Length: 226
Image (tube, rainbow, N blue to C red; front, top):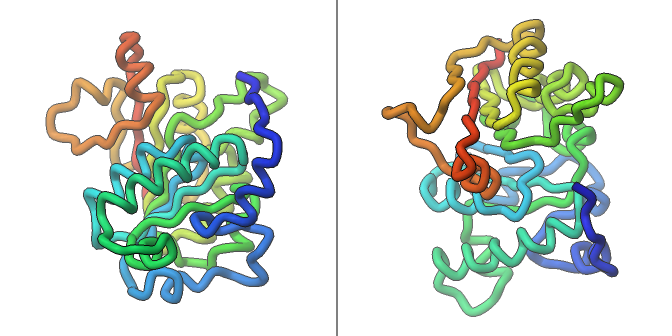
């Protein structure tokens, strides 16, 4: 689906205190300086409007989260959800104070540049939720579970770090299972019907709510760096 571009979205984001801009980063991120602690780091790649990352961050206060989005038009909407998240968890009078006290940051960045932003072995978990399936065969390397991206994740993930992947697209899921198995990752969990699992703590995304209401099955896997 083609996004309707919001005029001035890029400039709004570049001047926003609520978002880290990839193009303003001169070197690798100092995550300890950003969060002022040594807690685990989790990234959501392609976070959309930010429902998932805000919800999971609110439930896991001892983990630091970064939601990453490359489309400015979508990121503006995520920033609005982030503001609501900050109001719910932080009692402060200024946005900057609220951001500093929270365990969540947003970032304007392209996934293909992550290994130029994050140090090697610095991330504990990567979430991929309902990524673009890029269904044409000649577009397969654009899929976020293709080998070029898995190489990037492997570089920035810590030893035993995890990728958690969800989709309702069976072709993308089967492709992802195949590429991950061929890479230096071990699949530790897989389901072809997540919402019929009874012992899984599952945080929903906007797309997940929408697709599951239509009766679509949700597929999920967790893979570990080995």
